[in-house]
Length: 260
Image (cartoon, rainbow, N blue to C red; front, side, top):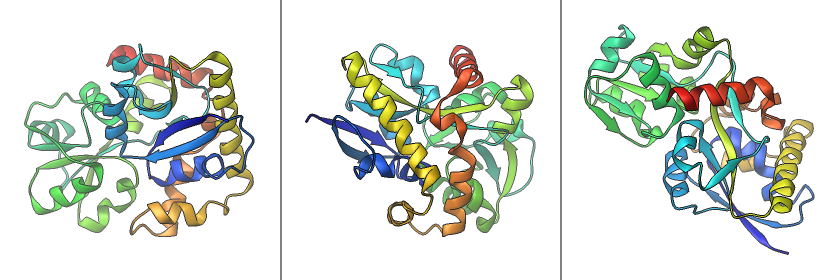
């Protein structure tokens, strides 16, 4: 039986959704070697086609279209919620984008959305996503573009939400915000790609059917996050689109890729 490398993030939505596949709880004609990395690191490694199957920011799709094809299962789309711009005090989005701004990576969907909503005119500083809140809090940067569970913890750092770019996107387009998708390397044969898609869909369905089964796995990768924060994060981004991206999801992805 062959082994496929599968890159995904240690964030609660991924560890919840892919726990069953990573632990052999769903049928698949292959073994999985999980590689858990920050989403921007996954985006970077995709330029060298490092993994057989990988999660990627939708913002990175255009740059790796000759190396990967998107699967219909495993995607992360939100409805009116997405990356946040935060600062130490309330201010217009354009002001936040005009100062020293921390971002989680230039290939992230978050940065693509920000460039559409309010193109940054100040200094852009790339930081790993889990360092951004602290950088804003200490004044290292004027504002930060935050993703993942930081949307639930920024207030504990004394910060204000300047804008929710998921809300902005949905008001602009009427579509869900397409954050990330699962992609298979182009050199995989069609049968393997179909089997990977089916196994990922089965893993997501297993997560829905057995929501407590992944608790220890989620907690092992969630650092200091509480169970409540993990649950809220999962509820936002593991949804029907994760089973099948759907026609509106495909339209949202196509529109963001074209716009970016």
